Length: 350
Image (cartoon, rainbow, N blue to C red; front, side, top):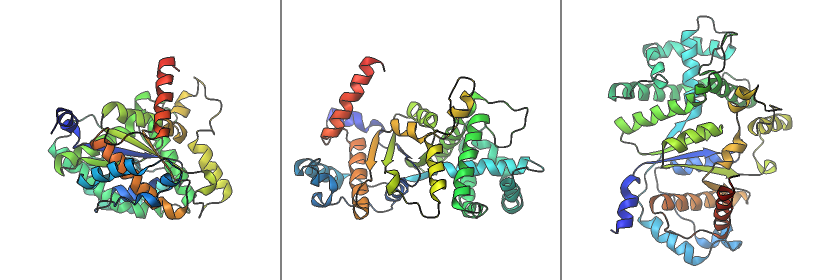
């Protein structure tokens, strides 16, 4: 082992990969590959779309193939923001005697009775308590129990659009107030912006303490300040952005108007103008457009449907190889151009 390798090995056992992208842009398929129990096979160079466009030559592919063949595969543990939002909804159902929200009313009737013994553990997701073994055990049991109940919760909505719209609204409320049920006397709390990432951090800490997990995949980031939270907190955090044109995304189960509205919401276009007076509204809102601007790695899925799985496996192998062994393969022409652009931006202080 060289001195360089020993330095890089210092923190290589711990990795967090975040996923972001517009609705139905393909990050779910990336998640499936990363959570596979079996190491993804590296596709042959000849079948990859990059090789046909001249962006990948056999020499670079050969280096990646040698590195990837030697790296051990560690299955990624999923941290799902939807499950964490659901935890806050259940906590609200327990604390509110007569919830006004019809979804929380259903949770109170259908979900809460089975979680009565754990109702005092929900606040351990967000209270400023040190995560010791006892708290970690409570958090993990709660997270796993709520995950099992989640499909029941999804059936509370009349269709997929209502589910997407409501979950995005609940997330925005949590970022704005730090809680789900708010009254006319409540005012926005700036620190509430990190309610969801702090709860996710505590779940990660619990898995590390009691399950010896050190590879995590987080789905999916919808707010740029939550991305910033993890970038500043963890040096081993990497954000993958999936790119797919609006015309090529799966639109089944949605009307054109519904898809257009989801797109506008995720671009944060429905709040206009964005001013100092309404800052609490737009900083707490979904903004995938800015999340993508903070991504460390992009997977472009504007390719033939039959090549998507091949391209995802190639990109996952490339990214993890670079995370584990930085510099093991040289950057592509596009990556060099992006680095030059980033350097120019920093020098100009734009």
